[in-house]
Amino acid sequence: MKNAKSYKIIVIEPSKIITEGLKTLIGEHSEYKITHCVNDFYQCVERLSAIKPDIIIANPTALDFRHRVNVRSLSPTLKHTTLVALSYAHMEEDITLQYNAVISIYDTAAQITKKLRTAIEQNDASSYTSDSEDLSDREREILTSVARGMTNKEIADIHHISVYTVISHRKNITRKTGIKTVSGLTVYALLNNLLSMTDVE
Image (tube, rainbow, N blue to C red; front, side, top):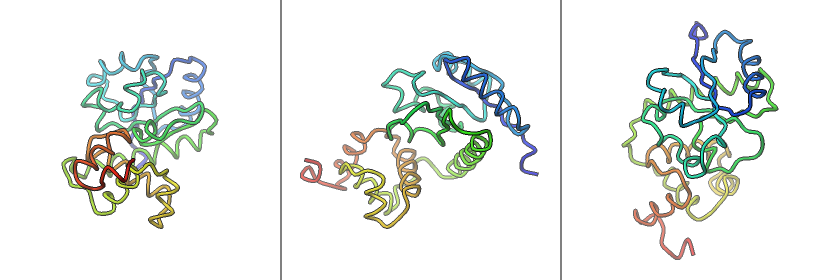
């Protein structure tokens, strides 16, 4: 049975109250086991190769701002680890795109475990695809729309797809190009003749 596997989780969260709450909620499910809780992302990165977690649940504010939009660059291990953001409030898209899922401190145990399952499946599916793969035609269209400053909702409306599909395409674009920010993707689009300077002025 698929749920026979136990997934090792590291929690990176400065608040002891939040950490203990997650332990209680996630502890109700034998499928998941929180093995380490740390309050510093950088301290955790040093131990990743030894711990080998399946999932990292992290509060993005535990990182300084320059790493929040490029979290996977901190360690080669992070490129293939399922990352889940722990959110207290709304987060910018550039930050959430780095993660396979976002859980809220207001989520129930059932919502958290469902999001963890989805994040694992998404991460597993993306690992089958080569990182050096070229962008598909649809991904190029989405990239161009992002570079023009459109929101996910606007992109979804223009291309007649759901917002979730847009987010999925954006994650694939980020994975394939290695570029995490909108400004970086804009430069990529300009250098690859996907749009001209007049499109972004």
